[in-house]
Length: 372
Figure 1 (tube, one colour):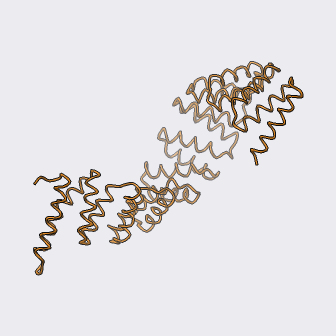
Figure 2: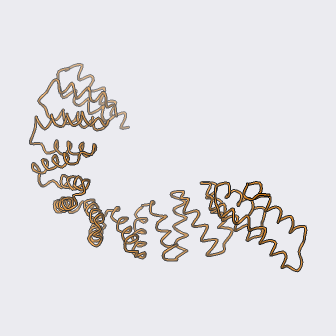
Figure 3: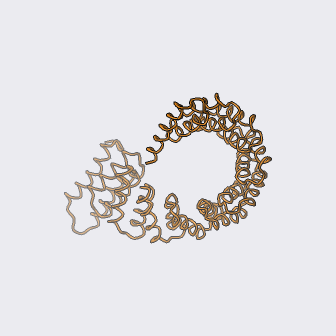
């Protein structure tokens, strides 16, 4: 529907230009329609024609510059914004957009100069202070970055993102208590990113895993699926709450097809619950999806435990082919374990014992692990 409307606009202004070819506004509106349809080269031609007809109109240079930004022609964008400033030096937005281009090409000091000019002309616009703070952050001038973000918050206390970025600066300079307080204010304003950053501080800096799990769960409840594995891992390795670990590993698998979640979930079933059926299921999933060598070896261990030796050997061999050293040791050890088992059993079948012994060794010979 939108594409159709854009095509209609293009056709309309083309016809308007046929009727009034010297009306700069027609060329400007045609250029804007081309931008909407992402036909940037045609948009540039239209804006240039508008400039030819009205060379003193700063807005045409502004829109031309914005189009150059869209196609990452930053040098031309800079020239266009500079010309817009020359024609209308009191328009703060031209300095702001020029600053944004300088940030794109990592000329942060020039960006700072541009943002400061924008602020001088429009000091109460919070967004300019935010971008100035970000530029200071890029040159690691953290005290000025903090001052800029704080000013943005004063001017627009309901913009949650400013709290998040201020919190990030505090975290970068290791003022974690201030970061925590700032992230919490961002959370109160509805900022999702602040939740994850707060959880990360509790997890990595304070090792406060209950608080970390609380905020990671809050992030998950808010729709952030990227932290599912981290939340599951905390429940698994830090809090030993395996039922919750299982829940979130499964969610991580469903949402992200996460290899580590498959392996860790299988490991819980294997080691904590002795639920070999589910362990086999998730190790096998990791093998099929990612050819996970550790899952191959662990499946070998399970099948050896279940005395299904053909399968044990199969998965040890797969692990060896993927370079897993533990698979080599386990396969070498397999025949000795079985020899001990059968030797200490009152009733055993000598031919069966000899067969399993030779079978394990033969696998090693074929893989080049042992020499005959």
